[in-house]
Length: 268
Image (cartoon, rainbow, N blue to C red; front, side, top):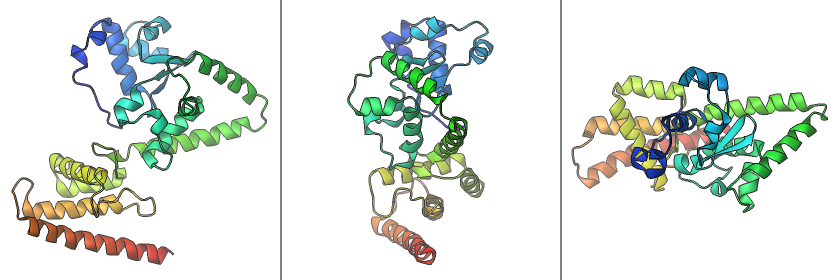
């Protein structure tokens, strides 16, 4: 289950206070249950079960961030900006964490529409485009096969999004790697701290804190093990001489650099 940011000050903002209790809970529900791009396919049965009462289309229309893409699908306009601190137009398919988001947006022509500089204040025109597009699919003989392949690829992409950690969502660990680290460290706070350190170092483009490379799936796992080895020797809060710190990091990360270099040579 992916973790998401939450605005702790939302309960004091005027626009939120003006919402009814049902709308407040509905908005929180949508932020927790939409996909990685802020899109939610409405399940009125699920909503009724969660709210113990009927949720109607009018309840959605009372939320300014929510726009209907079609009769049963909504888009939260400020979700991507809030969760990833990135405008839709700035999403880049070169980044693994952005690929799944772009794929979801492309399904409804949202990414193309925004990157072309079109007004995104309403999705009424988009709704018409989606209806026409869906109608055209009926005439494509291979449409079912194509859709099945796309759904499978989206599912795999979605699963990969759950493997990004740190404040900047730039530290990649598989569930197995995360579990092995937690088992070795046996302290959730300690693991969180070294992940945040690596996330910050990558964001600041510090030397020997490279962004994730799919060619080396163990890259961040190995780097975090080196971080932990260093922390065990030096502690988390105890100040240490700069020269000692640099020496330990250089030794450990030089080993990692050499390891990946040899691995690349062997694979070539």
